[in-house]
Amino acid sequence: MYKSAKRGSSVYESLRRAIIEQALRPGVKLPEDSIGETFGVSRTIVRNALVRLDAEGLVDIQLNRGASVAEPTIEEAYDIFDMRNCLEREVMQRLCSMDPKPIVKALEAHLKEESASLGKDSTRSIRLAGEFHILLAELTGSRILANYVNEIVSRCSLILARFAQVHSAECGVEEHVEIIAAIAEQNAEAAIEKMGAHLHSVQNRALLNPEDSREENIVEILSRYRGIDKAN
Ligand SMILES: [Zn+2]
Image (tube, rainbow, N blue to C red):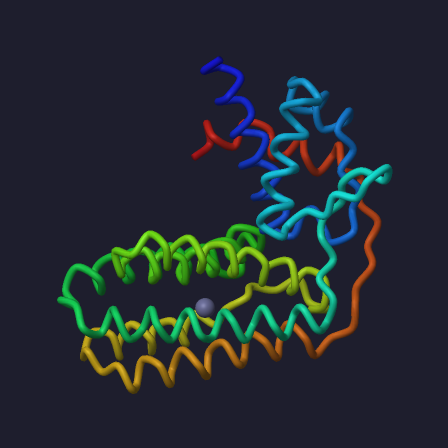
């Protein structure tokens, strides 16, 4: 029981990460049998992982047609960015009313990692950029807020994968530096303004460019994501 639950969550984590790092692109079919073979698990375990990802908006399961990576429409994309903006403003407001020292320390450590991977490993830097925003939400201490931000940031990766032409990191690191500075000063107004401007530029990068269609082989992609738990 324990073993199968563990393997189930590792299939879920691997698929999730492959989608967020834009290795599995919107619209790519996710056949239960080849995913099961790649990870050495049953179709039932794969199906459970896919259902969970469907609930998070990352996968689309259609009756008789199986699962594929979700393809957000342009209307959904704008809606998701609007909601993200609301949530992250709330994050800024809350963080600026808290003791900035431990918050700034955690953020700076993350930023160091982001800067280190910049220009070296694009999939890692895409993921780290998103995780900066998830960390901000976690630092508020609200699990609910953190869960919502986690979900919406993941869906933004999908939007970037679908609409952004360049396979580029989502965030400008220097913009993250400005956000940290505003939090350090407990200046909620500045923090909200910096975050708003930052998300606006992320949105522009995401939605200015036309759709990119690339052929990918799911087995090859997923074999890179086998056993990511160990690598972590
Ligand atoms: Zn960012």
